[in-house]
Amino acid sequence: MERYQTAVDAALSMRPDQPVYCFRPKVLAEDARRFAGLFPGKTAYAVKTNGEPFVLATLAQAGIDCFDVASPAEFAAVRGVAPSAEMLYMHPVKAQSHIRLALETYRIRTLSLDHEDEVAKILRVVRALDIDPGDITLFVRIATKGQAAYELSKKFGAAPAHAVELLQRIDRIGFRCGLCFHVGSQIEDPQTYERALASADWIRSRAGVPIVALDVGGGFPAVYGHDPRRRTPEMPSLEELMAQLRQDISDWGFDTLPLVAEPGRVIVARSISLVVRVLLKKGRRLYINDGIWASLSDSWTGKITLPARFIPDPARKRRAGNPDEIVPFKVCGATCDSVDILSRPFWLPETVDTGDWIEIGHIGAYSLSLRTHFNGFYPDTVVEVETPFEAGEAPSGFASIETMAD
Ligand SMILES: *Cc1c(COP(=O)(O)O)cnc(C)c1O
Image (cartoon, rainbow, N blue to C red; front, top):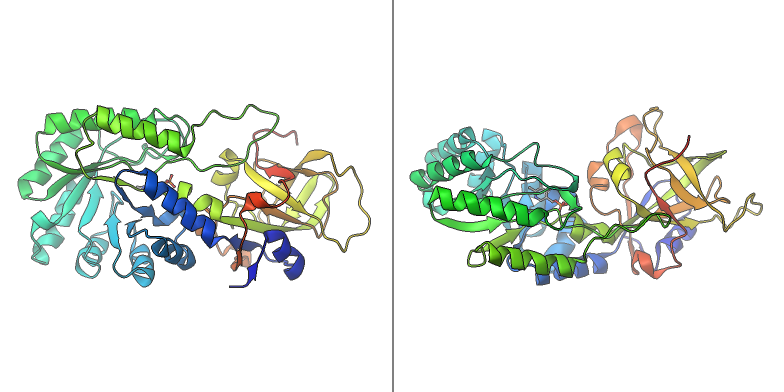
């Protein structure tokens, strides 16, 4: 990987026409250690957030030795960089052949589910492979309600009474029982975990079976930018949030159980920024070389404000507009598809023009993991950058906020 001091150095030296991911291994290691140091249990990095080998290898070197995986490709990616790391197969709905691969080839012994037919699938493989069910922990995923930028509880999770039945069924077979939830990504309300813990406690007391572990999932918020014209949302720091979570865990009597967390976004977001180029400026529109089919998929741009840094091309000698005026630009993506327009504008100096670059910060989560080959565009250039995004000149704008007149 080529190395640069800053992303601005990378842009000015490479003059790239392709989007460039600027990876900061030190920041990743720091954020991983910070989380693991604050969470009172096992930290299982959620591979779907960003499963690039360079990310997984950096995490393994930083001491992360447990990974939340959901597919054969993720099993292989983790095994490839961290052969002795533990894997938790926490997808509630799995293909029978993938369960077999997990248990037989990868020797995974922890799985999650939210339905009795999934218990039957797992049991079939366990019998076929002659594994002792007592070596396997099945986490029942419970439905939760809460405020997160991306609600995930609508898709998975057993209602409380159903979860009680599942635990009793699992225990009767001889599997070890765990409880898990995943409140959604980028929680917006610090009470979210408390409500889930209350529900877990109700289920545990009704089920009356031994529970060997509690997994509180992901959802821990990453730090992003914000629109300076609006009030900053009142989110506690990770330290404060974790102090609250520890308190809630102990208030609901789960502090004597082994705990697991599955953080994704909070660990990887800050470690990557993206340098995109303005291919054309047309009035208040910017056509850039990335878009919703690559690193800026719609879900991202709709809800989260990312800090952005304007990198003017020194080769352009004349510029129109006021460099101190930050104005909204509609952003059109690289493909020919007319839906490839970001739903929120980028706010940048009025002088931005064709050929300039924009560095979008804190984009390590759910960006490159979601890119597609659509229309033949597939950004895949990664460089290593020494300093954190915040270390340079203050970001001169921000990407993706809520409203813009067309
Ligand atoms: C996506 C996912 C995570 C990670 O969520 P973040 O909000 O990125 O922390 C954790 N657990 C499960 C089950 C997931 O599906």
